[in-house]
Image 1 (cartoon, rainbow, N blue to C red):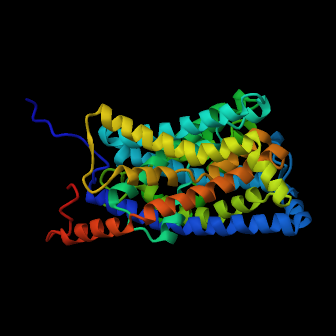
Image 2 (cartoon, rainbow, N blue to C red; image 1 turned 135 degrees about the vertical axis):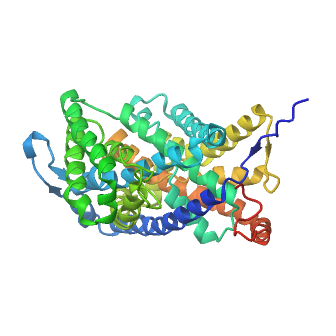
Image 3 (cartoon, rainbow, N blue to C red; image 1 turned 180 degrees about the vertical axis):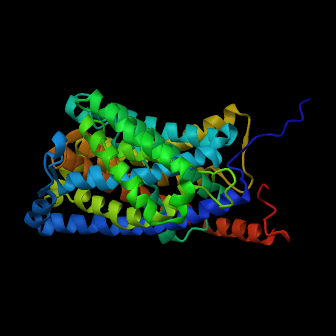
Length: 437
């Protein structure tokens, strides 16, 4: 008889990982509130002062600099420029997870990665089923594929959930894996009129960025001005060349982040590498400026009253997005988690029930930042199909938020008991007994 321990799905990880995740969730929840405020302001402006809003969004800045075609509207600058900062942070988090986080261990990463795949595949399939007869509408198949972690965490902050550590970590890791899939989709399926020479040229500043960030990470960590003089100019050149190559410019942000070291340089007594330093410096701008400005220019849709709203949400695109996000995410994430648990002959952590997994899966149906971006990439900013897609994204996100609040809120008393048990189990060294060491 084998003495191997039975695998546990959503078991607690290391206490250091728990502390790191808690810090990330607190910062992201603040950004989520700002995101909601910006989206609400966009909807009000688009419907109460449409001439002002759409005139501002479509105002062009820039020019044909060195043949790179950078004469863009403010809406495009927000989507292609400011959102690259957000994707830079996503890249930093991805690399950190693969180097020192949960995704470095295949056994730990298996459940959230498979759940993320299910949470992308099922919504995309539902969307295609509704839009199969219309090739133009079918181009938006990836719209319901993404989970917006900031929006989701803002919902958790509002409902005041005492969500257990394992579920919080699962949500964050799931969102990170989801982001990786979304980035891959954008890079491979939404590249148009590829210019290979410009793409190769973009790899030069990206490689230089990685070499310098690794070689001089102590300088860039301890001198706030050093990245402004060296790394940011390289990043701007890489962004411009990537944009001109036909690959969506946000991909440049991810590739640049992958070149930033996570661990300190050998012999350096620093507590962490350059990646964490840059994350602390860049995140306030991303959460407080870049993403809210993108949301303001992207989420504004002239609904056209109740009739216009009804027509949008009942159209094939609207139904595909709404059912894809609300039902598809719930089925895909929870179903994939259940399946991988059964195939591993594992069991769920004793403190949790499958209703908790389903609640997190429903919360994963909040698609916002990346979904809005994919809608623009699929249909074109401001087109009728884009407007329908965005109305459906906002509607689905609100529905998913409400359903998740009911499901997870109903379990708050249980979560509070688990939280009190965790606090009561503290050792003399400060590490709760119920976490791994």
